[in-house]
Length: 231
Image (cartoon, rainbow, N blue to C red; front, side):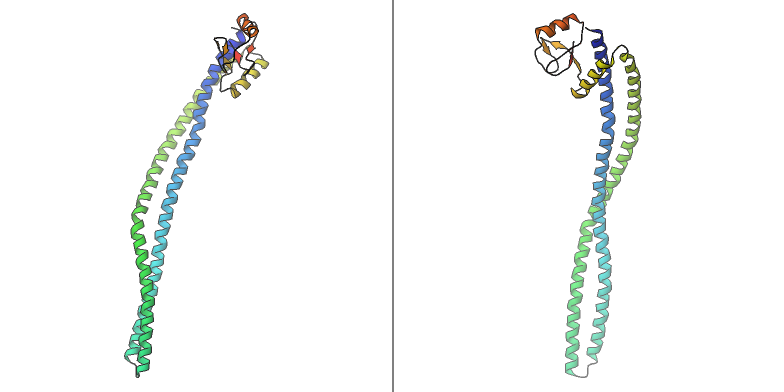
């Protein structure tokens, strides 16, 4: 095996380790965002239920004042009716009482609907609030563990990167540039073995000339199909 290929193969093993660690590091923000998004959805559900209940309670209180106003108006009309001096006055007061009672009944029916809404949604609000609190606790634990994990992974990455520097000695710039480009674009497989006279990366059969050069170990041989460095 060509010495430079041996170094690049060793470098690839190191870079693969670094890459796997980096994948784990990069996954932390994504996982955090997904968990925070889930919590935000739970909070939104709770807030919608809470707002609906509070609005219903506020509207019910407003209607209660109006109902009391109708009660007072009905009482005054009844007093006016009972003191009527003529049938026409009595009849007019009676009609007014009837209209007031009908309007009051509409408000009371609306109150009943609002109370049913509060009764139906209160358990849902309590359940949603419990889900939010549970999710907040889980997220807090995860964030603490994620920070610790991220620091640990970064420490491992730094140690491996220091080790990596030793494998760069003797590799010229052109060889390193070729390797790095392949490592990024060829699924982290820049250097692959030849098995059964075919490239281990793309499974293209090598030419007799490339096989001879590879056996001679005097130069870097690359696959004519995928460009990977062969050994």
